Image 1: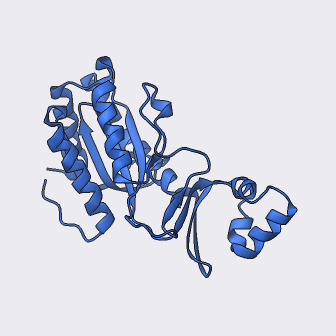
Image 2 (image 1 turned 180 degrees about the vertical axis):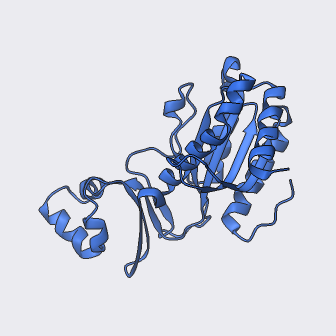
Amino acid sequence: MSVNYTNRGEYRTYKLLKELSNKYPEDKFHIFANLYLDSDDSRFPNRQVDHLVICRKGIFMIETKYWTGTVYHDVRLRDLLKMVGGNEAGKTLLSRLLPQEVMNQGNQSFTMCIKSPENVQVYTGDENPIRQVELSGLSLNSLIQDKLNELGIKPYIHEFVFYNYVSRAADDQVVDPNGVLNRPYSNNYDDWGEGFTKPQHFREFYDAVHERLPRQLELRDDQVDAIARLIHRTILFD
């Protein structure tokens, strides 16, 4: 499909997906960009999806973040406290460095982007990137699951956050204290992790998926085409 991008991060993601599609034509990539999921299910709000890939290896949903600064991915206050010693002195230090909004999070997970001492952005609840893409996966499932059941297709939707800002500056980094990003391939979907911090990590992961995903978990060509047609009819209306 032809796509025009104003977001550089989403363009980089699209380029990577096209690269993988060209490298593995046998996987039958269908790449959808900037989808809007208008869900009739009140449990799942309407969502915008940066990229959706349908291929023989499954359904991949990607939320791209092209963020400068130091990003702390899906952390809790206790994670930050542990990083500075886990004692009262550490808590005092954090309270001086971070906005009160962070100190008030308690046990709630959030993603934080520190662009400067004066510019700290906190993403909680549905604005937390991993929660964003998980909700998008649920919304997509609610839109197409009944039709997939009728077709006898039961694909797994894999949701990932992709931090793909390219910089060598020390202040531009992603901190992942819980080790949920850049995980290596595993035959267990639950061990696939929450996303990637560099194109190379994404590329290496999919290379492993291509080589090692058990045959019984793959989709057939006709199933891939059926899901893609369903996306066109249900979401794109064409």
